[in-house]
Image 1 (cartoon, rainbow, N blue to C red):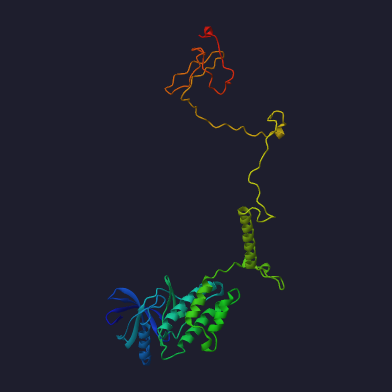
Image 2 (image 1 turned 90 degrees about the vertical axis):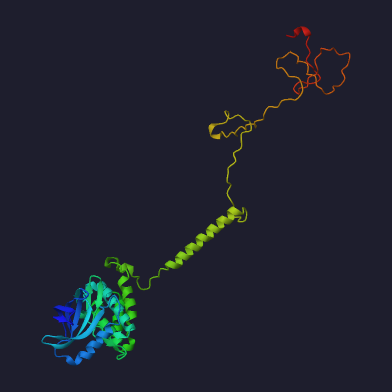
Amino acid sequence: MLLEGRYRLLHRSGAGTSAELWSAQDELLRRRVAVRVLPPGRAGATERFLAAGRLGARLAHPLVAAVYDVGIADLPDRGRTPYIVMEFADGHPLPEPEPAGWRRAVRVAADVAAALAHAHGQWVAHGNLSPAKIVLTDVGVKVIGFGVDVADDLDAPARDVHALGLLLAPVAGPGTPAELAGLVRRCLADDPARRPSAADAAGLLDQIATAPVPPAAEIGAESVPAPGSPRRWTKRTTLVAGAAAVTVLTLLAVAQAAPGALPWFDRLPQQATVPAPTDGVCDEVPIAQRFCAPVATPPHRPPTTASVGPRRTTRPGVPNPPPTPSPSPSPAVSSSAPADSPSPPESPETPASSPVTAPSSTLL
């Protein structure tokens, strides 16, 4: 069958009391689509059916199946039939949740709650949420079938939250987080005003789904404190230990910076002084007591050259050669002294009172 010369119906993939779901091909855009068709014998619901399609076209969310087109077409053996063209969700309907897979069910419920929160923000409600309206695809969850105008029914969002609680009720049993059971009780409250919003439910479900849960083997009786046992103040103990460490480090810094500031904690000597033996002989001292001071090496002094004066000889008994005449005036010499007599020594090593003299015959 071909709708409006564009949408070719391939096969029926599902049927319900409110609509039939067909897999179709968009001949114009050449893509797979899903087409919802009103069942035969429900001509009186045409306007409501088309209005639901127009409401669904308001929504643009990755978790909501988009609505592409609405209209009325003449079908063989059916006459004028309203239809809604939607995004094709390639997957399978949500199976009944099991308690063993509560974490996966919570993740799916978090996505469904996020889709509901987006729709409620656009003043659109689902009105008939059930596992058949939730499709699990390779890219995530797709919710189909939105069609209630919140402006006409203000309690419709609360009914969506109640339906979400019914989806989670089978998994909120023993062995699951207490927060999950508390959320289910709030969603199933008799008073719609006491039920949480879809946005609040989505946030809490996301926290429950991502919270780490320790293995059952690590949860034993020893991990639960016995009644009347003292509580462990881990934070207080850490703070006390840190304060004590800071105090000790402060005292060490003061003692090193100001010797004598702490009489009971004075600074230790940095070097040990070992006295040298008084006699200077190390060989006479036992080996265990040999502590000789190192011999100090005299500093190197460069040799000095006298500007004037005779050259001294180191040979004993040989007089020094006469001094070289100096241009400067010299003191007068006594006439009684022989001309070839040597001048008195000027070296500090030789005493001036005992000059060295030798007969001229001994000169080489």
